[in-house]
Structures are given as structure tokens and as C-alpha cells.
Amino acid sequence: MQMRPSTARHLVLATLAAGWIALVAVSITYRDALWFRYYVVDLVWLQYLFLVLAIFGGAVLLLGVATRRPAPGRWSAPPSVSIIIPAQNEICVIEGSVRSACAQAYEGEIEVIVVDDHSTDGTLELMERLQAELPVKVVRTVPGSIGKAAALQVGIAQSRGTLLAVFDSDARLGPDVIAQMVPHLANPRTGAVQGRRLVHNPGRNWLTRVQADEYRVFQTLLQRARQAVGAFVCLAGNGLIVKREALEDVGGWNEEALTEDIDLSVRLTLRGWEIRYCYEAQVWEEGVVALRDLIRQRERWFEGALLCLGDYLPQILFGRVPLLRRVDMLFFLSGALLSALAVLTGYLYAMIGLAYEAVVYIQLPRAVMVAASGLLTAGMLAAITAEVGFSPWRLSGVLVRWTLFSFHTMVIVPLAIRRYVYGALTGARDWRKTSHEGARPQPYDSRA
Image 1 (cartoon, one colour):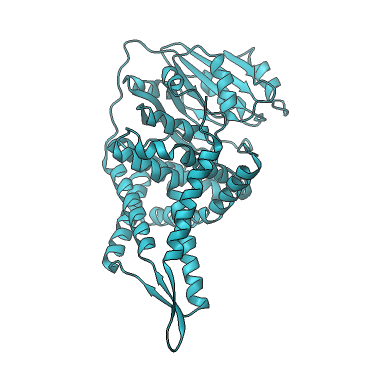
Image 2 (cartoon, one colour):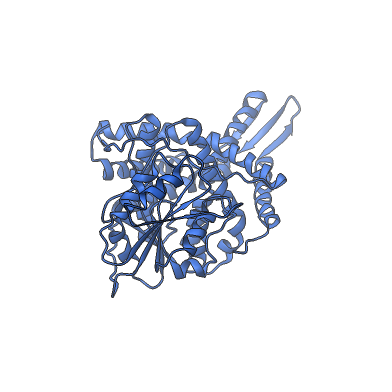
């Protein structure tokens, strides 16, 4: 597909950065009085930002708890489905994913395609042996191709299904996942559907436990709420089905994208296609075990969101997409960036106050800020209760873990910005795959 020139993307993000720096600079005023010199720090714009983020986040979580799941549609005849599993050095996990994909109880025609992306660990040889036992087709990427999107393009070219399902190599599927998801695509304007991602190794360590909380509680409720109010439902890379006609309408997978799922979600939405969320279709995957690997994964996710923001910001602002959906797309692509930059800017103001004589003006009423914080807290508590039940021990456990985990954005955002700037200057791009260890699936214990 033809993409926006990178210079336009860099210009968009550079303009946003300049605007932020200007706000910070304007809010710090140097005063020279007769008896001493001091700085005046005006926090009103930063307060407004925190206010908007808190109200929006809290409202979305509460809507996710209050809304009902929509009923699926009905096809006149079950459409054919091609399941595509891209794999690069996944010998530890790929067999379980392929077996669960081949075991789908679906009335229509179904095929399973594994795309080997230059594996060197025996993944290809394992898949070739499984071909004798399972109805699976194995294809290889062409020399020189890089990234998951390129592998998906190869798999799609070899597929024949009306619907294209994408699962990662560590996915574990119940036998009815495809049958549960396909009805949500019966509406002619629905282009894709995302299943509910869950972590199958939460007991491995603290990191996998908090990822299980994240997927089961917060991602679930956010997706449900966004679907209910007509906001931006995003595909998540693992456990999605897209119509072939919708994918062709937006030009296929973007091989330049670091996060091909987010990129496809934005393009589908901008073209007027609906994306649905299927709560019932549970897709289990392996939580990242090592902190270093988690940081690398989230750094790539955030850098990919930055790339999408630079590529599509003008279209999001001035397109024909409904206003709420446009606002939510902006919130999704920039929410982590704004939150982290706001906190870091607050630290900057604090350092000015420590280093110099400073007068800080806080102009919003305290009651307004307290109410916004209360709304966000209420939304989080309601979301946790809806998924794990009411228990002070469970609520406090999830809330404490999630609060501590949220600070990882303070590390990831600067790293992702550094990588983005480095890529803009050198043209380099790093498609880092998430490492898997092949952990045995474990049941999720919500009492912990």
C-alpha cells in the first residue's frame, strides 16, 4: 500500500512537540521585583489536561461496566475462513497454537496457514512434520521481507477465505472461537472483529499477574465501552478476523507499520468500516515474563502509536468519521503520551520550585479536581469489581498492582520517543518480536 511520506509524519509530530514546549515555556514567567527575583508557574493548562484525561478515562470504564454486550448477527450461509499464523523462531509455542486452530468447530469451510518468517530454530521443520497429521498449509516469506505485516501479506496471498483470521504463534483457542466471532461480521458495514485477549500464564511471576489484570479487566472494559457508545474499537493483533473486502478496500496490511493492528484499525475506521468486539471469544496468550522484554514490547507498541498519530492526524481531525470516534482515536493514540508528558512536566515545575523562588498558581477549584479524580477511581473500582467480584482483598490487590504497573509509561515514553527520533534521522526501523518461553497454560485465579 502507498503510505504518507515520512517527512509529513515528522512534520506533524514536530508541530505537536513545539506546541507542548511552547505551553511549558509560556506557563513559566520570570519576575524581577525590587527586593528579589522569582518565577511564576501557571499550572492551569496542565490541570485542564489532567481533568480531561481523568473524566474521559473514568467515564469510559463506567460505561464498560453498565453496557450490555450486543447480539451477533446472522449469515445466510457460513462464510469461509482462513486462519493465518505468522511465526518467526516460535518452536516453543507454535504447535499448541496450530493444534487449537485446526480443532475449531465451525460449520463453514476453514483453512489454517502458517507463515514461517525466516525461522532458524526448527519452527519450519516442526510445521512440515505436523502437515502429515494436521490440515495445515505452511508457506515461507520471501527473502528480504521484514515484519509481521509482510508475513501476513504472504499468507493472505496463499489463502482463499472470505474472512481472514489472525492469531499469534502463542495463541490458545477454545474450539468455538471462530464460530463465536464470525456472526459479528454479518453486518455489511462491519469490517473486522476482535476477540477477548487473556493471559494463560498469570502465575509465572508478578509481571504476568499484572498483565493478566490488564487484559482481563481494563482492556476488556475499555473495548466494551467503546463499542457501546460508538467510539474507537481497536484491533489487538492476536485474535482478530477481518473481511477480505475490507482489507482490500484500505490497501492491505501496512508493511511499514510497527504496530500493524493499530494501523489497520485506524485505516478501517477512517474508511467508514465498523470494528466489533467479541467478549465471548477468549484468546489466551503468553504474558511476557522478563521486565526487559516487557519494556521492549511496550516501547514498540508506543512507537507504533506515534507513527500512526503522525500518519493519520490530519485525516482524523478533518475526516468524515463521527466526532466521538475521532476524539477517541486521538485519545487512544496519544493518551499514554499525554499522561506521561503531563507527569514529567509536573516534575519539571516541581524542580523549578525547589531550585528557585517560585509562585505556583493553581486556578481550577479543588472540588473540580477532586470530583474528576473520584470519577476515575470509581470507574476503576467498578471495572475491577465487574470482572473479579466484590472483595476488598481482590479489589485492593488488582488496584495496587495496576497502580504500580502504570508507572512503566514513565520509562517507556521517553525510550519510544528516543527510538522514533533515531529512526527519523537514520531511516532505521526495529521490528522487535515478543519473546516466548513456552510456559504451560495456568488457570487465572481472580482471588489473588
